[in-house]
Image (cartoon, rainbow, N blue to C red; front, side, top):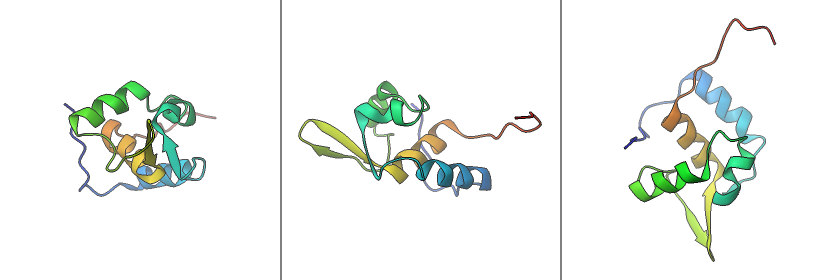
Length: 92
């Protein structure tokens, strides 16, 4: 089980990435749309598994049969769950 460390402060690269991604996602994200909205970075099956293990995003809500997440919780979960390392030295 991959435990998410919510206490660890984000480093500068992680903060920059979070700010960049936050600008492009709606405030509330439906679980079934996560893979599409994150370009495949986060997937439906991973989120479902982590939610059932108690290691998913901090908060989730239900509306009817839909599971919803706050954008900031979702992004921070992804960063903390999978890590983030900038690849340097490659020309764009």
